[in-house]
Each structure stands twice: as C-alpha cells, then as structure tokens.
Image 1 (cartoon, rainbow, N blue to C red):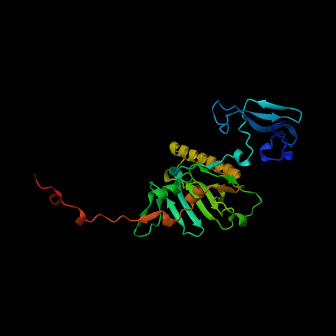
Image 2 (image 1 turned 120 degrees about the horizontal axis):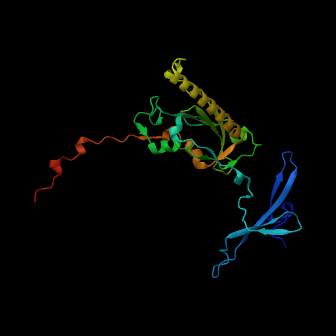
Image 3 (image 1 turned 60 degrees about the horizontal axis):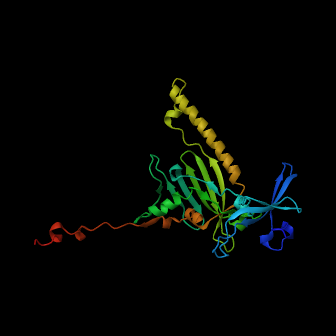
Length: 292
C-alpha cells in the first residue's frame, strides 16, 4: 500500500500527490517527481496519540514502481499556488513619500503632502474646528511599508467583475520621482479582501537652480548635473522593470491593508481639544492647605 496515489486517481484530497516537473524552455519534461504525505516521528511515550510527532521526512516517487522515504519534509513543495508567490510587492517608507492622493469611490478626495521646504507629511484642507488624528494619518502614510497581497485574482475576471472599472485611486509619489498608482476595486463574493491593480511610473523631480545653471566652467555643478541625470535614468529603468512585473496582475489585498489605504478624510481628523479655561485652574492660594 503506497502513502499516496497519482493525482488523477486519488479518491481523497489527502491522498493526492503534488507533482513537481522539471521542463526545458520548449516545454519538454526532463524529470517528474511525486511528493506525497509527510512521515512523522512516533509520539513520545505518554503523549496522547492525537498530539503526534513532528515531520522528519516525506514519501516520494519517480514512477509507479517504487516509493521512497526521504529524510527531508520538503515543506517548500507547497501544494497551493499562492504559497509560491512573493507577497511583498511594495515597500515605501513614509519618509520616502512626497504626497498621497486618494480619489474616486464614494468619499471626498484626500490629499496628504510634504511641504516644499521639507517637514512631515500633512493632511491638506483640514476643516475648521478639526485637527489631524495623527494615529489615523500614520496608518495611511505607513500603509505602503511592506504592502502585501494575499492572492492573485483569476486572470479571466474583467474590470466590471473586480470593480476596477470604477475604482478608488490611491496615488503615492516619492521625493525621488517614483509614482505608484493603486486602483482598488470591489470585494469577491463573501470575502472582505479587495481587488487591486498597480501601475509604477517615474516623473523626474524639478531641477534645482544650482544644477540648472551649471556651465562648462563650473566642474562641481557639471558633475552634480551629470550625477542627477544618471540617477533619474536608473530610477526610470527601475520603475519600468517593477511596472512590467506588477501591472499585468490583479491582486487581492487583505481587509486591513486595503482599509488603511481607503480611510476617508472624515476619519483622519477629530474635534479640536478645547483650551483649558483660566477660571478652572485653581490658584496657589486657593488650593493650598491650611497651615497646621
């Protein structure tokens, strides 16, 4: 009795083997390996049987003639497609960002920008009588750090099925000119995740006066201008490479991460704390205890 059977012949899911095939560039199969269930060490004496032992190997086969037990659990041969994906796809520190613009959807537009003279990212157009909720704003500005997706959507789904025909658009621009545009759509049926797509581009920052005025006689300025051109060229190439990697796909963002990007402006502010009244502050004489 073998610990697994061929994928097509299995009656139960736990009996199905994971088939790993090595192929040439033209699709010819070089080798095929069936990866079966794990082998566990026996439970220690006195341990309830349901506790079991930890995996110390796995059953494998090259064909139907013989099954081998190898001394490696082979946990990296994951049966689910999503387990093979690198789920970290954007990593932007809040200090890298120059602005964030959120438009579309049912909420009013939100703009967060860094002052031209430098400083912290600041929510624009704060209503009278309100002040920024720094915790909520930090959730939005920090959402691009280690942004992960949970899965990739079925490529056959069209924009109307994913809600990306009428998306909320989150555009993040960095101080070095990279622009990340996320379109966030609807949720799958009975799911809290959101469909999302990503486009990456580059817009060279404005040239400073010192660099723009560089002449052939000012060697330092010429060197700075040359370095800036090379820096922009590399940044543009990096943006194109990342766009080629990400833009063909529709991702599924987790509820919390999508929610961080979709925080409405009304949740980024709170009522101003009223100033303390001078009448409510006890004077030293009034609050002093009688001398004993």
